[in-house]
Image 1: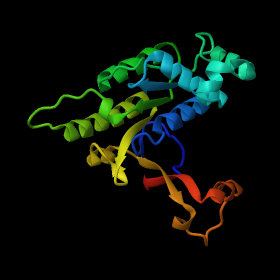
Image 2 (image 1 turned 45 degrees about the vertical axis):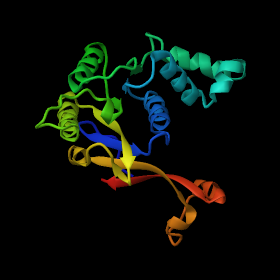
Image 3 (image 1 turned 60 degrees about the vertical axis):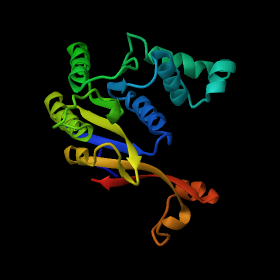
Image 4 (image 1 turned 180 degrees about the vertical axis):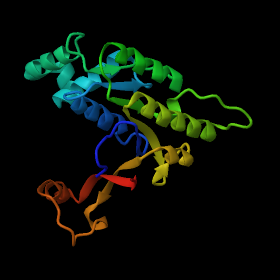
Length: 222
């Protein structure tokens, strides 16, 4: 869809509030970590909650299963804990506080001192600490922040995926922030009737379509 997550670029993932951006991004981070080092800038959850969310996504289990029936998936849980140990670590995460772009850069550089870093996920745009003023309202400050992330992606040769809230099918906080991105993906849900049935569909799509609802990624900028 997007030609790969190539270093030196910034991508954006948008979806409605509460739709599942973080779950999607955590699952992506877990998948990426099998081949590359990834930093997840978690600016919403306390460290323990984020750790458990990663565990649920990695092991494909619910919160209840993790808390009440962990023995059912004990091997998967143990293996993922090993992946997060210092010896095998290839997925890093921050502990829930808001961060400026400079602080994000510092985290990346700290990791790159001892190992490689290929991927940074930032959750989410409006949590980035920015300086506002009469001449620089929040939307403009966010635009500048994304432009600075683009420069950082090039300087550090990493791919940055920035999560953002969707409003009416577009980036909610600062539409101009899209200018600094190479791709904007919209995570959404639609009915089968809204898709062109003349085009071939995959077996997986056909299976999902039985309930007449389809979750999809739309490249609104590519």
